[in-house]
Amino acid sequence: MTYIKGLVTNAPQVWVSGVDGSSPMALGPASSALLSPDGSEVAAVSIEKAQAVKKSTLSLYATNGAASSTVSSSVQFMQLLAWSADSKLILVTVGASPAQLDVINVATNQIHTIATGVIDGASFSPGSSDQVVYARAAPSTTRVDLYVTSASGTNTRQLTKDGRSEYPLWGPNGIVYSHEYIRPKDPYPELQLWSIKANGAGARQLTHIAVGPQLEGLTPIAFSANGKHLLANFVGQDPQAHTEAYTIDLTGPKPLWRDLTGDGNGNIGDAISADGKTILLTKGMTANLGPLSIETIPWSGGKPTTIVAQGAYASWNR
Figure (tube, rainbow, N blue to C red):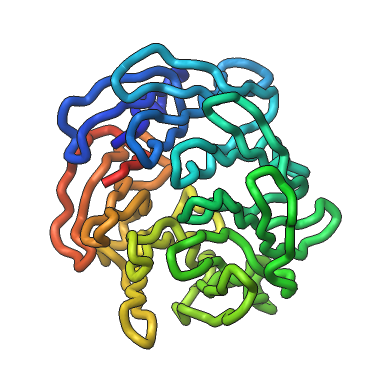
């Protein structure tokens, strides 16, 4: 497992530990990090907070504590999105509007820019094809749609054409994404989860959750290995002020969704175990970084177990 400590300082660090928080070890500077699926490396982005220009650096850390290597750096904001299933490629965005969506080969440091524009999420396919699904809007429009492409950016095809599809997550049985519903009296759309096959067929709505004022709705986070258990976050118009982890059970003919903790006091769904039985959470809100902690909780609910005090934004390969 990896996680971030020291977010309230100018020098946050990425740590690695067992999935229960045991044997913790600091790896180096980072404000966000993702563990590779094979558990051998950590991709981490650090930002020079004290500088006028917020330079971002993408580094690789070996989980055994060996020396790190710099993969890429930019004077623009860099966001780490995902590892490929074979632990060979990383997805990142560089910049904002427009942004570059880059695929980076960690062995060669070769970078392919596969899309440009306003990027609202991206995900690798769970298999060996290394295909990518991403949401993109042109800088001059508000229409956002899903596209599928190769890891080199070739053979790109448009998956949706409704102009309201974003935050895609590619799972074993298809792609889940957030669909925008325009609300006449609210400048922010309502987000409900939909699914679609990778060939563009079978689009259907999964959730019909009530979304109140100052709230937006659901964004997908992670699947179990069989694609039957889905973790999502219920976010507010300002995600720093409101986030709640939700589970969506896809085992039956109709999806069943549930507020994971039911506490309403704020938490962030970080990851789900491959067997779908355990959820990894950051407890608290990013508007107040000091008291954040990392917990595990059963899929079915129950009492959370704190495994890292004063840690946040965890990832694992459990």
